[in-house]
Length: 210
Image 1: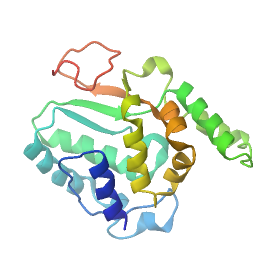
Image 2 (image 1 turned 180 degrees about the vertical axis):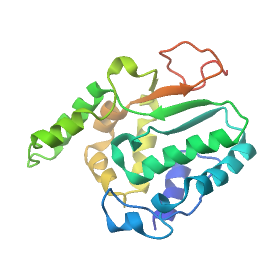
Image 3 (image 1 turned 135 degrees about the vertical axis):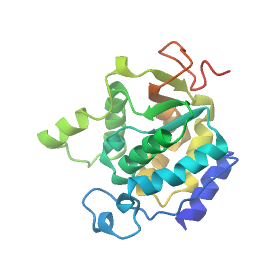
C-alpha cells in the first residue's frame, strides 16, 4: 500500500522519474524494526551509496537535496539517507549544489504552537524533552536558502493526503489546506556544497545555474 501511495504522491507532485530501491522501513529510533534484515538502517552505507551513485551518474543532477546529519529529528532512515547520499557523491566526479533540509527555530516554535492548537489535550513536554526539541533545526541566520512554495501548498497538501498511511501526515491533514499553506509555505535549507558562487541567502535552489 505504501508503495502505491508513494507513487500517487509523486503523480500529484508531477515527478517525472521515480526510482524505488525497495529497502524496508526501519521505523522510529528504538523500534525492533531497526534491527530487521533488509531494513534501510541495516544496509551497509557503501552498498546503498554504490546504488545511488549509479543513479547519479545516469541522471547527472545539478542539485542534490538530502537530510542533515541528524536526519532533522533523529529518524534512523533519515540519518541513513544522509550518510548514503553524501557517500554516493564522494563516489562520483560530479559537483552539484548540495543542500541539507532543515528548519529555522522560529518556524519550529510556530510549528509547536500549531500542534498544541490542534491537539488541545497534548501535555506540555517535560524539561528534557523541551530542551531536545529546542535544539531541532538551526538559528534563522544559519539558514542559507529560503524558497517560498506557497503557490504550491495545495499540491503539497494533496501529495500528503495520497500518502496518508504515514502517521505524521495526519496532523498536517487535520489543519486543512489554508492553515497548512500558512505554516508550510516556506522550504528552508542549508547549502553545504556549491561551485556556482551564488550569493547567500538565496531563494532558489538553482541560483547560479539558470
